[in-house]
Image (cartoon, rainbow, N blue to C red):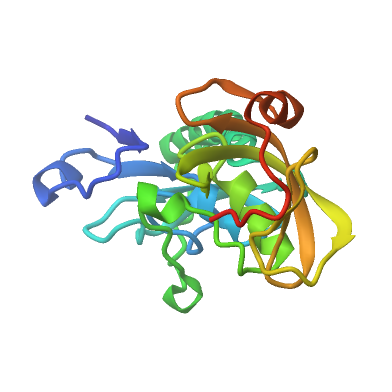
Length: 230
């Protein structure tokens, strides 16, 4: 073959495959390499509070997302954007970028660029255990964590012994000296974070239930003010 295009494969190809195509194996990766190499670049960049991401096409080699870069295109991350929304935006941009890359490959105008390993960071696969919300973190970090996990694999906490998935939240103007994780407003599902600032859940899913807005959940579950979530 002239070229092999790889997207969302998640494994390193053997040398027997990498050496087959005339122009090499081209991978499209959902980050601005060398940042966020690995399996979960979309979630991790939002969790880290980044304001931009993007798509990179690169030549594949033995390393994980370490090959020479071919083309890149940036995408802005808004303050309310979730991982799901960023995924869809990057998918659209990526489809166009791979076509541009293949066209440039065919007409010989590509200039591969080495990655600067000193600027790299790794976004490893996210396990279910890693999705649990840590309310000891500052409110902004908790907020970014929730949107970075939405809609999948989805952040969660516990109310008593019941798991509560949290799809969306908002920052509030509330402050409190209560312990982190304390539910200070049971109507708005407002929770204290590690810096004394608070967030309110706006879309949740109770254990065994369906996804719903916070007010609908509160009407059915009726959580008690002052309980500790975690």
